[in-house]
Length: 277
Image (cartoon, rainbow, N blue to C red; front, top):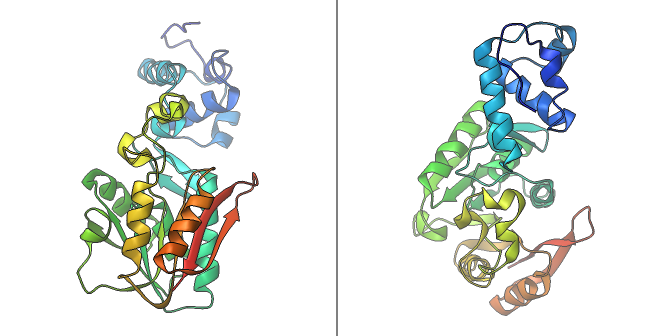
C-alpha cells in the first residue's frame, strides 16, 4: 500500500498503516512529528505535511526491509532510561539488565568501589550502574571511537558520571589502573553462527557481535586479563551466549576465580557468569 503525499492525508491514515504493526507505525510517526502518543490521539484527524508524509514513507520502507526500529527512531529504553542508539552500537536488550542488576547488588556492599565496563558500546551498562550507584567510580572503554561518541552523549544527557577511554579491552587503561568490579558484554557469537544473517543482527555492527572466532576468544581475554586489573576481593561478571555458561565457568575457575557461578535471565537461560578473587 502506498499513501499519496498530499495535504489532505490525515494522521489517522498513517496510524492505521496496514503494512506495519500498529505500535511500529505509531513509533515512526512520533519520531517524524516529534510528538508524544497522547498528542497524536488528540490530533488524529490533523493533516500531515507533505514532507512529513515523505519522511514517514521512507522510514516505513526501511522497516519493511527489516531495519531495526531502534535505529530508525534513534533510541531504545533500558532499565527505565531512554538511550540514544545508532548503527555504530548494539541495540540494548533486556537480557543485559541482569548484568547491571548483579553489579548493583554487588555494589550495595561495596559503596566506594571502582567499576570497569569493557566494550561499553552505547554505554547502557556503565551509565545504568553510575545512575544506580552514584557514589561509585565508573570507567568504560570501547575500541570504537564512534561507539564512544554515543556512550558519551548518553552519559551527558542522563547525568551519569562515567570516565571513558578508547582501546582494545585493558589496553585502553593506564597500566597501574585497578578496579573492584569488572563487567562486560563482549562479542560472543561464533563467526560461523547462522543467526548473524538473520533479523536485527544483520544490521548491527558485526565487530560487536562476533569475536571472529569461536565466540570465546574475547571472553577468554577479558577473564585472563582481569586477574591483573582487579584488587583483592574484586569480582568479574560477563554476559555470554545461551550455551557458553559451562565453558565460561571453566575459564573463570582455571584463571583463579573463586565462588564461580552463573545466573539465569527471565527466560531461564544462564546469561551471565562471574566470580571473585
